[in-house]
Image 1 (cartoon, one colour):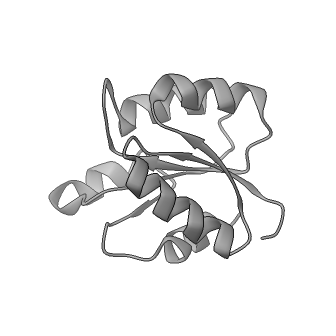
Image 2 (cartoon, helix red, strand yellow):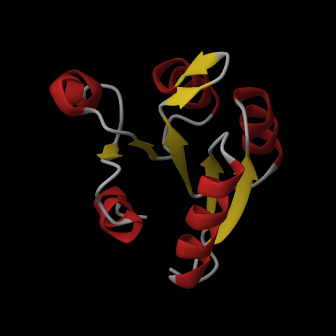
Amino acid sequence: MSGMKILCVEDQAEDMAILTAALEGIGYEVMPASNGGQAIDLFTKQAIDGVLLEDNLPGATGTTLRTKLKEIHPDIPVLLFAGVDRQTKFMLRFFDAYLRNTERVEDGLADLEI
């Protein structure tokens, strides 16, 4: 996993700090973005290996941002994290994987095969 770059999209600073520490702790390099515009900017300018995407962002949903990211680089996996619950089956049609708030980050990233 060492050297792989993850775009982490989370609007809450505290949650971003936790995600960054968790990802860096298992060997990933983290490119943080707090909104969809920052995420798209980084996604187009950096060599990204995978995306960890919060579903509930201000001004854009995870599905909307995922569509834009996949238009740019369709082969880069996107992992949605949120309490998906009843929408899980629907969400899995659009995302490469998803992570419930109660799961560990490394478990969700393992599903991406990156």
